[in-house]
Length: 398
Ligand code: FAD
Ligand code: SF4
Image 1 (cartoon, rainbow, N blue to C red):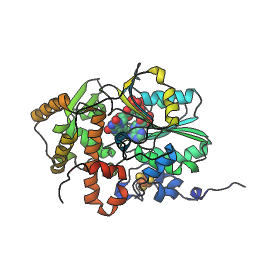
Image 2: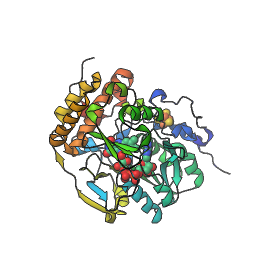
Image 3: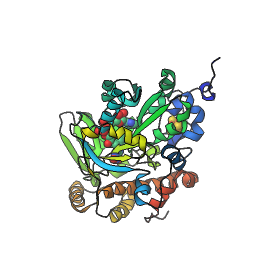
Image 4: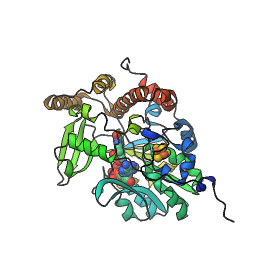
């Protein structure tokens, strides 16, 4: 007799139906599947439980008295690295794709959860389980839109796979950690990226149209450590727009409400995190959280050029000044924005201090957003580490 798990009797919601987290839903995909059965406990926006899940995944939760733990989460190693031979068309140098390919080639896993794009739209996400390195490579580069990566959970269960690698951003990984024991896996590897300021597909269009000179040819973009947004166009050219020249009034509503109320920028629950913001320009920033993360990184160490992480400058004034500027939707004229960008790049925070600058600016902004829009959720939803980070700054009186 086949035993039916309680969640297998539930039914995922159809597209367009309101999700349990309502406006705060980040479309992580869980509710598209019968794992919706666990949504009340698993959803990052209904039940913040980062500290508990850190203890489950890494053996301990972050130590709030240690600055690096407070900011970057539980870790055993942090390095800056880049691929000696970058993968053409990857977001940065392709460390994420390279690790996923090795995991398959060396038989560590049978499948990789990752996200390709729909054939008719390069920015429309299409989550898949990759079974070959070619399928992993076809998922390279960010889809800068909310992506329902967990919508393939039922397929994972049906595939009968016992060893799986999941690539994803913080909200997807929190829900995955909460249900990982129910999927029937013997081993789960989690490779994460940091994530911030994500958008719906319509929001992305508005962002491109208000910010780039040629929105229709943008292949990818990134908010860089030189305080500019770099847009890469189809012909290979790079367009740079200073952060301080962004039309903040127009863009205020562009970011998804989920991302305006998220405090898991650094993907606290992944085994290994690959981003860029704590590394020097042109390098990626790697945070190894536990032995599983180390096992993944070791697979590609010989493909990498590495260096120690460093930290320079003092972010605090810049963060404090950014709070009312963002709040009032101030937009500088382009010449002033360019000048400010150049000055800040010369004297501003670098390396880990730049990462702290970005975390502080987003956490203060998001704290105000939750306080104003969801006051009843503020206390439970904001994790202790984020409260401690926000307390360093003066926020506008309401
Ligand atoms: P690649 O080898 O190109 O692989 C990228 C992988 O990302 C692919 O496997 C794909 O499956 C996965 N992916 C793509 N889009 C999504 C998505 N929407 N949801 C889940 N998975 C996805 N790093 C920082 O340091 N600071 C930031 O502020 C920051 N913001 C980010 C915002 C978003 C929306 C995303 C998706 C990533 C962000 N990152 C950020 C991570 C960074 O941009 C790179 O993704 C990371 O350094 C890996 O680069 P790579 O060349 O190794 O990746
Ligand atoms: Fe469901 Fe995920 Fe949306 Fe939460 S964020 S309501 S778990 S789809």
